[in-house]
Structure formats: C-alpha cells, structure tokens
Image 1 (cartoon, rainbow, N blue to C red):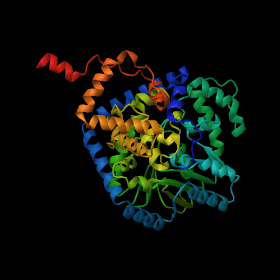
Image 2 (image 1 turned 60 degrees about the vertical axis):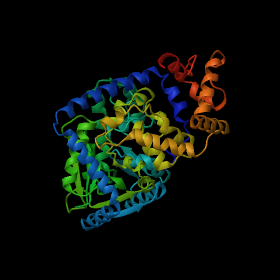
Image 3 (image 1 turned 180 degrees about the horizontal axis):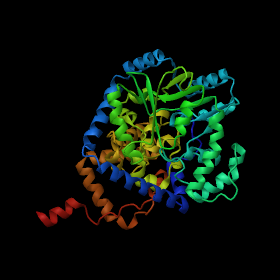
Image 4 (image 1 turned 90 degrees about the vertical axis):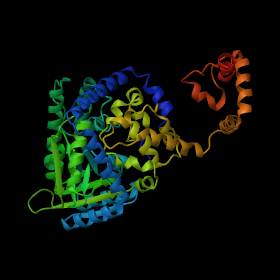
Length: 471
C-alpha cells in the first residue's frame, strides 16, 4: 500500500480533533443509525442468514487457502475470453501498468467506477502526474473529488457531508470539472442528483477509456462483477472502447455457485436491499457488445503478506459491505478521516496495518482505534473476528518496542504479577499511599490518562478484605 493519507497524525490526535466537530458528529450519527436500522430489518427477512454467513466464511477461507490455484485459473479463463491479465506486486507497478495502457489509446481522460483498490494505490494522482485526468462517476465519489476531499466511508464516501455542504460544492466547483451546476440549485436531493446526472452524462458519452474495480471475480469463467446503485457503473462498463479493471487478488471466488452466496450477503448487509439495483457482469470481450479491449490488473500490494498471517488473514475475507463501520461507536464519533487510510472503521483498523505495515505512527495506532466491544464481528457477513485480529496486531505493535520507561514499567508489572508475595506487598503499599496518587500519569503514560482518569485504588486489597470478612 502507498502513502495514502500518510502525513496525517496518528489516530488519537486525529480523532480528538474530529470529536470536537459538532456538524461532523451529527452527520455521522444520522447516517450510520439510518443505515444500521435498515440493515437490521433487511437481514431479519432471511431465515437462513446465519447459514449464508457461514457459507460466505467457508467459501472465502477455502479460496484463500488455494488462492494460487484460483488466480491461475482466473488468468486462463480471462485470457480465453479475450481479455489481458497483468500482475502488479505493488501500487507503483499497478499505476505504471494502467498509465501505460491509457497512453497506448492516445487518450488523456478516463471515467471511473468507484474502486477502493484504485484509491488505495492513489491511481488518480499517478495518472495526473502523467497528464491523464480521471473523472469519478459515483455520486459520492464525485462529491469528494469536486470538494478536493477524501472518502470517509466504504459505502458512502461522502457520509461526512450534508445536503447544504454538497450544494455548495456543486455550485462552486462543478464548472471547473465540466458542465456547471444549474443556476438556483437548492439542496433538494432530486436537484442535486439531477445536477450530477447532467454533469456526468457528457463524460460518459465521450469517454474512450474506463477504469473499474470489481466486487468479485469468478475463476470458473473469468467473469468480473460490479454491484452498484446508480447506473454509473453500467455506463462506464459498457460505453468506452477500453476497460481496465484494477482488482485485489483476494476478490476471486471459485464458481458461479459461490457468487450466488455473496450476491445475497452483500446487498443485505451494505445497502439493506434484497438485491442491488445494478449488478453488472462481464467476461472478456465480445464483438459489437461493450468494450473491444479489456485489461485486468491483479493487485497484491501487501495482500500476500496478510495471507501469510494465520490470524490476520481473515481480514482478506472482507467484501467491503461497511456494516462494521455503521455499528462502531468509535467510527460514529471520529469519522473515517481519522483512520488515515482509504479503509476506515474497524475493518480498516485491521486491514491497513497488514497492507502497509506498522512502522508509521498512523499505522501503529490503528489496532488501538477500538473499544473491542465486538459489535463489528456480530454484523460482519463473512464472520471476520475483528476484535481477535485487533488484539493480535496490538501484540505486533508492542513487540516493536515503545518508550524505554514504558518497557521498564511493563517488565516491573510482569515481575510483580508473576510473584504473589510481591503482588501482596504492592497492593498494600498502593492502598496506604492512595492519597498521594496523581490523577494523570507523567511521561509516556500521559497519552493514556489524557482521555481517562486513573482508577481509584481501594483502601485495602481484596484478599485482605476477604480474609477479614469471610474466614
């Protein structure tokens, strides 16, 4: 993974700023509660939801165990259907491949379907450096692009914006990117949607090259799948002459029968619908139907490193439904930008440190961006045990070594807890000196007590109380 969002402060500092933004918190609270309530009703309609969830987990685990075999099969079937497969070990290689393919067409503009993989590798920025302009066509991504902003949610990238803010962005910035917003534009959802439709229509009709991601890839037939709700994906996938899809290697599923499971899990868990309004599938190329040239860029960018981690690899089961974000009390208050990654919320807290490593302050802080309440695991449609992975990654960060005083304190605590006699003495000493205890820790401990008080020490240890009252 590249330096997307790097340069931002670590999560505690970024979240501290976010929680002081009353408008942001109001926007997030309204949106996440609305989505989670709709999802709960949609899932309740299915008597076999638990079985579907178990099936999705099993299919993903099986595929990840045999990922090498299914990726080779996918390459064979895509090639047989008229497509071309490219392998990208990292973001730099993927960006170089896509830029080269676009340049080969002689075009300097592309249209894009919403794709987290291309955001992950900062494709838009890489193309801009080569003189190629990328136009986002998903409504929320358009808002983010026009506002010179960054996505803050997996499903609803502009969740941190309200209607008044969106109207202002359209009125002020649309003209610089193409067709201007209509005069007298209000913040009515219908008017905002119509302004976006008119703005994007001219781009769809003149586009020669499109870039997409994919929700799934079927190894059995070489078929790629995009699910979306607005129709912009259908336009991007069918009108241009050249289609380039950048997809993470973990998105492959073995067969069409497996795909059927996820086409139930994803819409119910993300948009709270029985099925997505638009489910687009394409297999290679066909004369007179859709793009005449298709390229698939298979992206690693840290995924095989995550795959090698027995506990952490379950993050690769993620189908990007965003259900975990909508129930997370931390995300609801801090928002997506605080995570310093294109993948926010609980899933981002475990996926990003595995893709990017934990060397930077931002990535080392992410496993701690959770209360470990477990709500994310309960709603995950493929049963990713996010709290388990968070604790696992916290161990990894701790092993990197912290402040010398912190390491000394942990070593002393380990000795005391391992020796009952020493623990007894420490407890009695703490009780007798309780009036002298500070409310805030000094040095490296200050970060812990900046947001919480130290617990009050009782006057006597529990074991002394027990002997005195229960012997």
